[in-house]
Length: 320
Image (cartoon, rainbow, N blue to C red):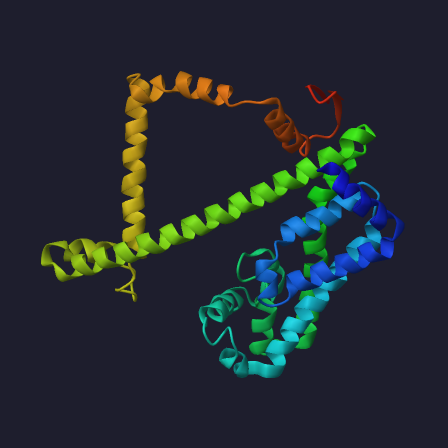
């Protein structure tokens, strides 16, 4: 598989201007309203950072192009919101999915001008915050003052893991370096997919729990014996808000789990007896390839590392 990447690497090395153009377009697309939501910036910018770390792309100019692309994307979004104003709500897909704008509006109302900076790093709202800022008539000066440092910080933060990965690859023998980079990028993509899947799962789980607690809240309100309890935990001015009930239930569940674990540990019950089987199960799943992957992750947090990989059969790592 690795030999497919070598022609592309050679081409980018011989044509650095193409690398700058790709960097600009990726950062631009990642910052546009809606389009930026579906483009995994953490993956694309990390890949570009890897090219910087290995010396394929110049560091300062590539960072400048990435920042400029992000700034242009944010400015386009802000300009569309400022120009079209309330008409935006009648344009597809916001007409069909109005909550996309509502989410960013609530975020903007809560954080004000700093939402342009903070919104860069917040999940689904990140690409529509500049659009909403324009829609709510934020001044061009305030937007520009916030957008420039936001674009630079975003580009730098998302490139740093790739830069470190590329710099570590330079310490390896040439025949191992490309494999190291590819495996590192695969690990990053895998982690991003796992994070996305977990985020989606827990958002759906939270929605289901919220619906059931809302129903339970209504039942407790209708029954007279439970009304004193409701009055005790209800938020003043928001009698229909069931958030406090959710906290009470979470506290009860957490307390029961703690008591169960405490009893199991102090009385050497079943929970302590599964330690050894779980340990041996995980050890049986351990392979040299997985060791190499997790060594890569570990090395991202070290100051100095030297790999000695002999014929892809054994690894020795010296870390100081």
